[in-house]
Length: 90
Image 1 (cartoon, one colour):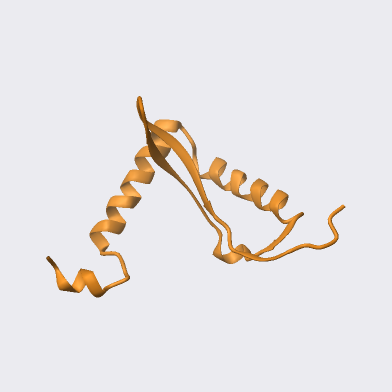
Image 2: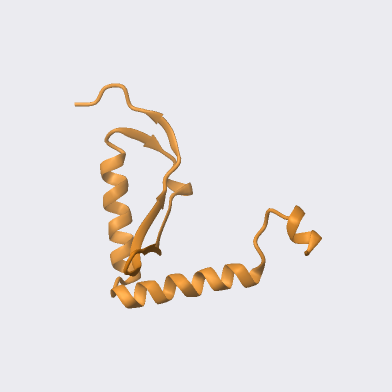
């Protein structure tokens, strides 16, 4: 067991590179370009901003895969920090 990994909250460069490669492969398999992913991000934030005050700078949206009965399926994962719920919603 590596004691440094046990006490470190920062992922190793190997793990980061491995995760990036996975994301690239998933995007290639699903033919989703970075431009399309950015458009999805903008659209999602526009809709969510109608109801919630969010931190635009900390938003993280990425493609990943999930394991299902028949294999891996693509998944869109979004981490959107919420500052507060808007009170006067039309």
